Length: 159
Image (cartoon, rainbow, N blue to C red):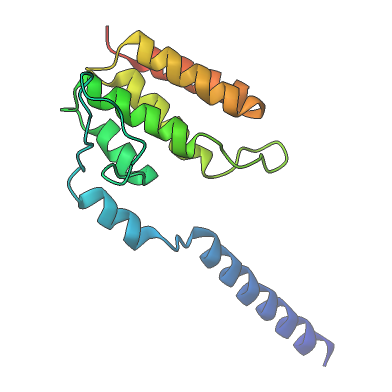
């Protein structure tokens, strides 16, 4: 009787453990992320310097993932990169608070942006420095993580 109860408890614990492991590796947005990666990179409308800038940003797409796609596009020129980085800071510059000592999972997107601009062939030092400073200014609690990402990105840059 006792051994039968112990066996049932062990089997129950194994089932619960299997369910938890399954949920750990389950990515709920996996299908939507793969669709976003396969879509072509959107274009950002850059206004010319001789034209006065309008406050109507309806022609420019402000979605963070679209801006990341523009930044990751190796064919993006310096003006497009600069505009995309400014829009990221302007509309998506504030990262969620840390989860204890760990960064928020959304911060991975910003690390990806930092790596990408450090390795982008059309990025210059002014773009990298300005984006770094603005991101640190808006998110002082992530200063160490931002500095580490910049260091790793610059170290991975081909000479």
